[in-house]
Amino acid sequence: MSEDKSIKIPTAWRMKRYYFFTIVTVIALILPWITIEGNHFFLLSFDKLKLHLAFIQFDMQELYLLPFLLMIIFLGIFGMTVVGGRVFCGWICPQTIFRVIYRDLIETKILGLRKRIKNKQQEPDMSKIENKIKRVIAVLIWTLLALISSADLLWYFVPPEDFFAYLTDPSEHMTLFGTLIGTALFLIYDIIFLQENYCIYVCPYSRVQSVLYDEHTVMALYNTHRGGNIYDEHKEKQFTKQKDLQAFMPTAECTACESCVTVCPTHIDIRKGFQLECINCLECVDACTAVMGKLGKESLVTWSSDYETIDQKGKTKYFRPKVLAYAALLVIISIILGMMGSKKEHMLLNINKENRLYSVEKESNGTVRVDNAYEFLLQNTENENLQYFFEVIPPKGMEGKIVITKPTEVFTAVPGIKKKKIVVLSATEMLVDDERKDTVIPITIRAYAVGHEEKIVVFRESTFTFPRADIVKSAK
Image (tube, rainbow, N blue to C red):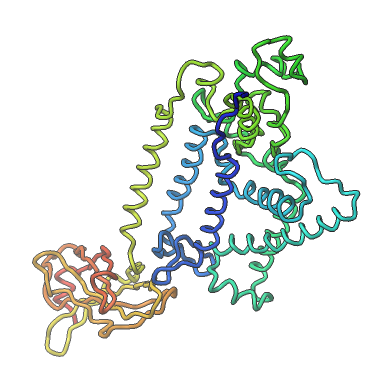
């Protein structure tokens, strides 16, 4: 009996990508619809001047959080590149996911316009009427999906509950409507016509990645020690047939089947060495694994590093100083973001003193009252109407001697609208007996929502100006 030389082939990276793409797509579509107490996981609303982050609502005046969020995103992508090359492009980038949906699902699986997923080099024969009809159907299907994708993107800036209401009156929301159509048209052009040329020529990330790579960066690599050198040092192809390769290098294992070439979505030959166009989709790894597996051998194309596969110096070092530095920065920035986000104030309050420092008036009972007037600008950042009031906290020893005489009753503030209140603080006792100058007394204003004093409360530092003693004594 003949011995079966084939080895067990692991689950294809392509299938793992499909599962991952499905999860990412479902999350992206569902997340905008999930709210906790009316707050979204992420929403940057320019319409209502709000930022929702991790189901916490922030006002636009609290956008100091956004740079930290952007730093986390960029450091995460750069750190991901240092470890796994262009893995973001092959596994997370919407461009790649959309191309897989259009090419592998719509054109190949649903319509049969392409015969095999494994051959991405051969374009469909559009001279046939049948294929022209299929192409029109494919474009129509993708047009619908492009509109859904465009809407999904906008849901992170205009929440679904407002989005559909706005679309019923497009004349009043032309910016939203135009962005929806414009984004959809771009996706149609990009996915159907520009295709992977976007990754190769347009996307700047492919150029940035080259400065982030080091000898331990993991990527799709062809093992020249086992497979043989198909290309010379000038990147010129030397061999197209296995027998010619083996005549030059008898131990070469490459079969010259070029399965790794025909399956590549960016139309490169991985055997040529490192190329910026490679997006680490690992389809070439799957192709070679299947071919070499039938011969009882390991794949010649692996997801590995130069250090391990090309230079053969040892095992890839994942936890190296550069990677640890990125991880440390991500942790530090995440902690800072969390700390700053946890200190969110549930109302906004600005205090400005009026131009006149004070007024002095003698009352009917003979006491002298010193007034300081302020302009309070308050904003309710919650999702419901609330009643507010203030209290003044004077320095130690002056408790109860500086009081609020206006307003005298609680007032209502509606969400998202700044409310201006004139506040008057008064003192009827001699706080400071200074004959030479006015005295500036530091005070603290406590503003709170009635019934929610523990949660919706802010403290603001201000001052109370008390006049010279002679001014107080000469008051009429």
